[in-house]
Length: 409
Image (tube, rainbow, N blue to C red):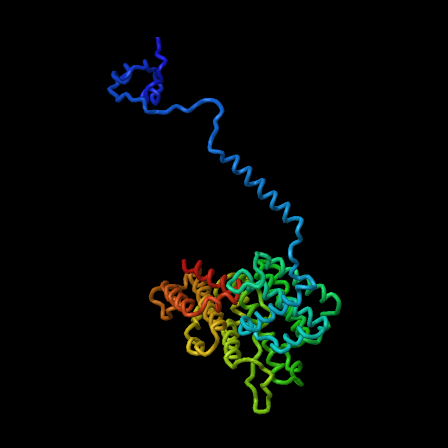
């Protein structure tokens, strides 16, 4: 007759009968230690620590909070009462932090628009600029809105810009404001991860610039030096942006070359420029970086993603501009230097894929160890520049740095 005592630990694990003695007969025959340390689980309903009850209480609490907040309308940042203050804040942030990387319009003009009724093409551009600033700066060290609402507000600014644009024939606009609005919308969509819309509105801005004739000398014939300089900068920022996306995403280009930015002559009035001379120098250097990539290379690059035989001796240009970068603002310096490193790395990776690298190459850019030099130089660049000077570039410079990191790893 079997004992009613529970089996010992050894018999339970071996799944054999146990006589309930200590030591049991089975353990003695097998020469095993006979112990009863195992605690059997209690059968029947279990009254545990109440984790499920706490989870249900938490879910019910969140539901009650949502019901209470649903009865209270959320703050509308673009309501008639809040819109003027928000637009002033956006213009102020643009002029103090973003103007050095986009010196495309007179600062006094933006301030003037805030203090008088605006024309439709002016309002279209102003709404697009606010969308750009909102998408660039919110969520970073300088937050305009906060609370995670910046993406929604940026999209609503875009909707307002398009709504105003629909009220007039924007294709016939004789000023560069409408195309500048399209450019700002394109960059805003880039910040919002809308790649297709970003490319579409960039091409729209380029088409409007060509229709307007920004690439011709006739457009600037009777224009003063400062106004002509701003229009040429608008054309060149389209050139720079298109080249950047052409390299990053293998896109074809429409703009073959940038416009020359002539220095002021003895009779030119430069009082209306309203900026430090270093800003003009930094913008010219940025345009020069991208102008070194010729159209034939980009055509071959967009089709194959490789370097053609005629470009197998492509040399990096990072060291060419470094001595001049010391005099420009940090925001422009970050843009130029990170762009240079990124372009060098992209070309090195293309050369690697084609088997053009060797340890005995005459140019250091064609050696296997060249990414180590890029990494060290990029690290030195980023550590020498303030965090705010890097953040002001938005997602673009983050992606350039990320692309560089991925390529180096």
